Image 1 (cartoon, rainbow, N blue to C red):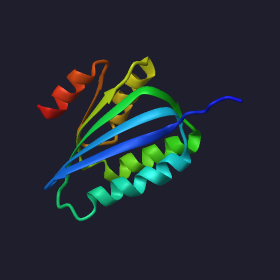
Image 2: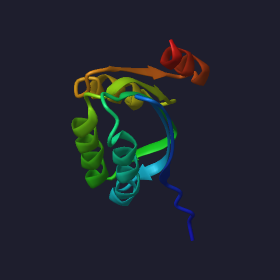
Image 3: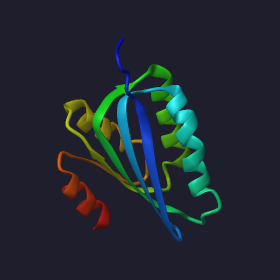
Image 4: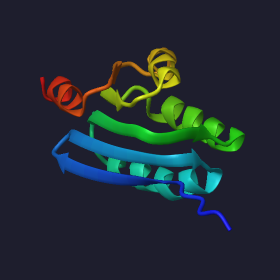
Length: 126
């Protein structure tokens, strides 16, 4: 019997229109993971006039997405892409750097890849 670990943990902090999301992805993400976190993100943004969102994604334990989950991720980005000011992807895999570049095409803010958590946080706070 193998232990299959996967999922997303999310932290949401708000201060007026400023919203900070922190996400930690583990394993291969599923459609069910997005069914859980999408309403949380929608609720955090709902009713905030002109939200300015900064996101830290810890992908150091991320192995990828199931096809339907990848589609969920894409749809979430399209729906809220205009509110993201900065997205920092902290990772340790080459494909994550490529994902950061491609993700930048679909949002109005900046997306950058980091291999150092402190650099990622400093960039978000700058």
